[in-house]
Length: 429
Image (cartoon, rainbow, N blue to C red; front, side, top):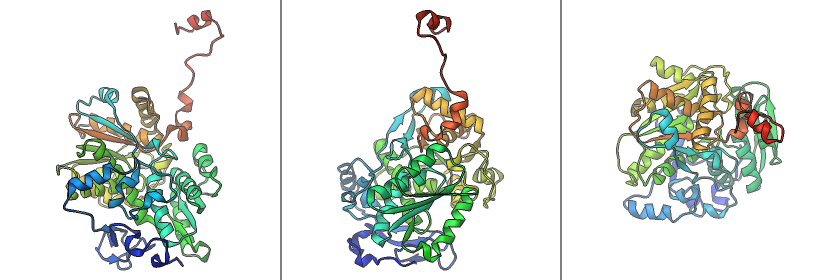
């Protein structure tokens, strides 16, 4: 695919990627120049961004971060973006609320601190705004003209909005049967929205073919040929959680699994903070959450397998409905290394958990958040999650996008005539 060289872009090659110095294969370790590639030429393993991070002065770096903008660009010194990234048109996502969830904690039997990292407060109401923001900046550096993606819904909306804000054309691809709210939100920004007959995995395969075709020339697929950079946006969740906890690591964190990239990058972010001396080094456990109707990683974990066998998704948690998750094996490694686990819950438990979070903390989560809260409850009941420790649970999207999940069992307490007698007769007085 023809791309503009980094040298000829508006930002010099030396500074366009900040502290990033190479792409490194997660399997064999071979390094490649920074470019729009995502697989190792030697072993076909996935590539990720390698850095020379600023070191030697953790207190100075901490102060620099705290003086930055109230969005992910406060962490520019740790991301593959130029130092002046905040001056470019962007949705500027991030620095969302870390809610101390005392009422939910009591319901779940948690005696330690429980926090909900509520990423529904991002511009398009999901964590995907974080990853797309990084991908857009890198696409600009590479001279791409069109932004694209394969998506289970939230990413399509995030790409459409970010493209509109940043002046890119967008063309995104989704399974044809997504929730109506996500379809409308992805389409409203004026880009091309294409429904594909099939599952997300079918959509993803189509996009991989499109990249190799002349029609895809000049296209930046945020979760394919820009995937190494895109994934780095999830690290900012780790950075924010630790900063909002007073620059300390949580003891336990529960993360929903779709492709698995978010979980692996949060772990990467935590390790970077430790290496930089920004937080005290101590053990932490990472738990993964899936819906029973699409639980390939959970199934592999509980069976003690290292290989994740694909599944055909059948769940209301469509944002997590990736039957062949690219980072599944790495999720297994992290859960086992940290002493965590990967668990799943039924659709009924997902709905119950959505309502529980809404009733106790006033947070209306989409189905992925219901999966995470539901799995947290199950982990406590099974003795896998310590209720006395500091725990963070992720809500990655807004419940207004997945109304169909709760609509059948949620509605008016009563319908009455506009009289006090009718109010009393309904038993509401």
